[in-house]
Length: 138
Length: 138
Image 1 (cartoon, each protein chain N blue to C red):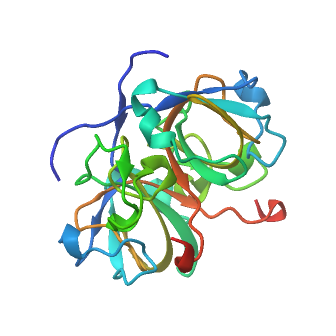
Image 2: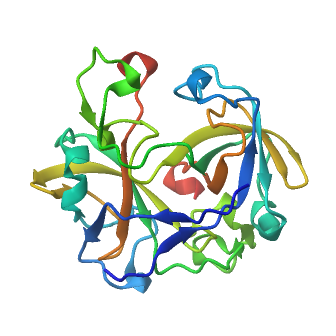
Image 3: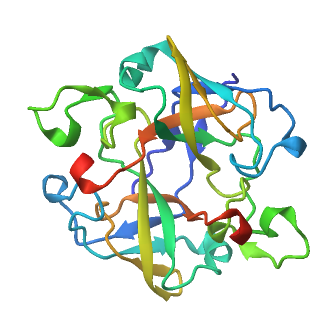
């Protein structure tokens, strides 16, 4: 309701063997490779409590997506009826924010290795959040 | 790795009785009220497959958060040690993206009523995604 532009500042980048959009799996648990999140040194104080062996939510900016798409065939399958993008996980959508649940495999300074990340090499990372457990553990 | 600014375009806004940051619950299942998502008419084709009774993930821009915070006391409790923001759900973080799992209660044109949304009135909405079920249902 005000006109200040909402500008994202990447907190880091994905380093991945995935470089080809056509070959990327559709979800992380469908054969995505392990990858590294490389944090910007200026935000390193924010990552100091990440722990190997835990699951986290990684938010990315799917910078190769189309933002003018509002309906898609789910999973690119043209035999399935066109569906509004807010009912799909299509990367093509007005704000192409990727959400990925991954396990942390290793931490080396500002580099964090994660399992099964279906994001392309050099994808901007926007945020990392813990998976919420039951109330008693918050 | 390139310098194009990453600019979000809100797809809508939250209408909620919550107007006071100090009184807002910390998570949606801790007493947040029902609220409305009001979509921009230009994206209405993207919401046409939303269904009453289903759970969705709502992404918001927590526009009253501080972006220069990297360590916080979890849940604002000063008896708990300072923790890196990427290991907390603090709204204060470099990119204050809110993630909310909510149930759709009603749909009326571009207005969608949801249960238990802990976002303040007039918070920008960035995206809505389905909750991913098992592989066989994707």
